[in-house]
Length: 285
Image 1 (tube, one colour):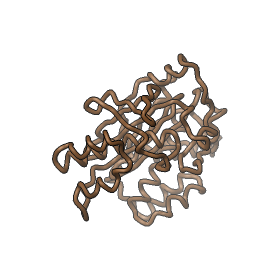
Image 2 (cartoon, rainbow, N blue to C red):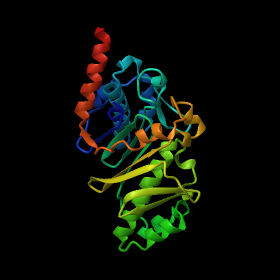
Image 3 (cartoon, helix red, strand yellow):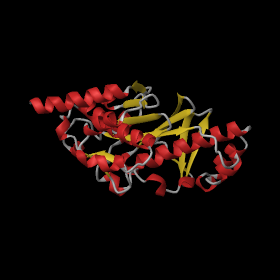
Image 4 (cartoon, rainbow, N blue to C red):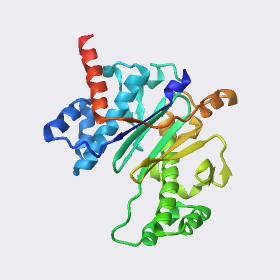
């Protein structure tokens, strides 16, 4: 039962090049109050990523939870984390929540039935106007001394960038899981790993064994990380959106130790179909 709440979907948007009318149709699949947050972007690529991110949320909630389309209410906290407003009362999972991320060619969503979930995608982009070391130096305050040493001693410029992006991806997934975004002191969150597996985290120097992390390669220079952790770690504004934040050890471990599935590749057309059918079934009922 609980495993159904663990979802990992990703969409490659690189080949989706909609006409003006095609984009308007896709936008019309979403409730009106989301339109301005998508259209505020000037660049077409940014609009595409924002639109598909929103469609993924509605499609996943409808498919996994079976909530009728017109009853799905997705809002954001003041820090920008999306949440399902009706989530407290309309399904059986202890704490269903989700997170989205997009960068480069990919847009993804991850969900969990009990634990907090954080998700981040990074695209291995080579800086154009500065050297690799100058580029990563801009972010040095975000890393612990141990992490920073791992980054700058990684080897070639390409290896330094790869190390930087992988640590960054994990940090983003953690702060997105707790709902704080980049306002949280990233240098306080230190990651340890063995060849980027068996990943653990220290927060303010203390090992937190109630969190699990996964880092995987999506393709085309993109990495994705997933964080799974305890709901009591959420900041207050996000905690208010959760159904439950207190669990005994046995209850919590049931969620923490669930399998972490691979990302399922969904197409833009599949999302359109899911949402279109959901809307039509609402109209006919």
